[in-house]
Length: 395
Image (cartoon, rainbow, N blue to C red):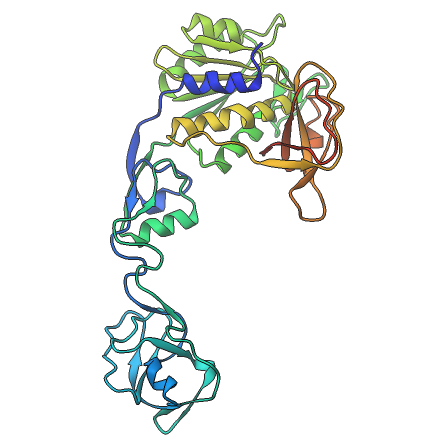
């Protein structure tokens, strides 16, 4: 069996990046940038007033000037008049261009206005105070955002600030979620004692949407090999990525590996040296479309989705691979067993980066995942004392 690291490498080596498209900024949230964006102007593009107040020449204050005739008001977005005399000032608003001839802004809280004059006290004033200098954040032509960046709120604000109303992003992958099993019924129908609710698909879809993948179809297929073959064949022809849940182990009705083989999906691996999720299957269709067949037990399904599928979708969309962050274990790990262990964790109550292992009662115990932050990856056969740093994956 492959190790988790080997399985990740095998998946990455089998992926062909998806095509890109140009979309308006309003449609780009959560997408992966497929071009480099550069600053159209200096950032900020002019000496910018950083506080409401008055603009003066600092040399006038240094020479003892504490009383300045107010010559006008400069609002944000208006062309400023010049300051032509040491005894003058201009009232300025946050965001406005600093008037030519001025170099310092005195905040309004330090000013008393009387009879057309601004009167200052004796508080110290530093030259250049409350001025956001032109190009202090970046020069025109500097790289603002790089290829592979996920576009969240801050990144979209940057894109708008450099004059981009549209951006080229990776096309949102069209994903099929396929649940298999005669025992599964929906949440809103009557249920027999021998049946269970179809929950995996809802967990998969929620995690996908949270990562910006919204083009989803959800299909349930019973344990009928001809029907399974027909449905998977159709979805292979119409979707970019297939994510199956269940039917992937070694039971009599676990048809998925055989059906995928019959449909020309080349197996890259089947089974990974891990717990939970050992029966994980991954392959690629003749057209290069990735197919993930996840074990049906709910904890296994969600762990494999986060550990393997979500990073693969990032790679498909052009995002470079990332290293999971490390967290510190509050409690130790005995290191028993020959398989890598994925154990859910809860955050420590002190607000630090430490976590506490939160064991489930098996791969079917998804109730225990409630209120957990994610899971950690623990090496096989290696005891870990409290205070050890381990990789962390968030739900």
